[in-house]
Image (spheres, rainbow, N blue to C red):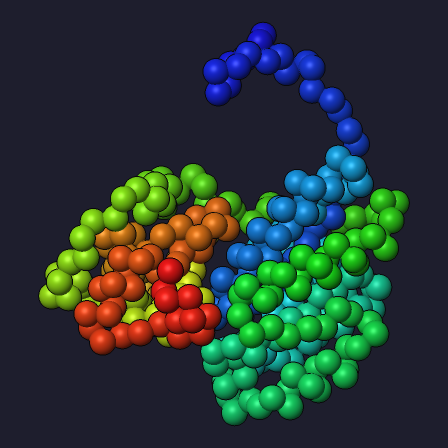
Length: 301
């Protein structure tokens, strides 16, 4: 039966079939680089859009808990409380021993090497340890990571043959597009923003989240929801304590408060990444708060 979509009628039998090999890609990251993990998934989807039909390869990004064994590994490596570097390095070693493609990224931004007394020497040690066996690079912000990962993924996949037998992929990383609140919030952010409200009308948590985002070099707020787990991150800080349903509801409400006021806008990554809007910066200015990094150089636009 023909179907109608976007005002046009099409037949499902006219679709061109094209065999492709699926490659599962594990995204392994500490909780305080959740935005980078979301961007990695977005870069992978963009690669699929441009290469799937031509190269007959499809990359499937995987959530860390659901991906015990994949065909490739993208690891964000730096010391984090509760997730020591040794744990991640063991997993990296297992992938390298199986000669699987591995991408290792070290964040130089925010507090990346400030956990547990870590220093810049950790980055140099990691680069020397894995040089020649994996793609190892560092980045200062999410924008730089996105550009480097896209370029390095493109180069590496040219060397991966279609005949490589991939592992059977587990369930892919939830896209969260079914989350109606986020979809509605993103639509609200895209509409004309209201006049900024006085500081007294903003909740304490919303105030804290917006100030943290203002200290981020790109004024980003990341929001990841996977089942009953919620992560809201800004400037390298994870705000939602794991396993605390009451706190999760409070931070969720604070996030949507900022969206509904027009203080943050959808910045892509399928509703996972938001950025302070011009109205948000205008409100921050009334609080004596100014942006940093290239956002400041652009005049908060």
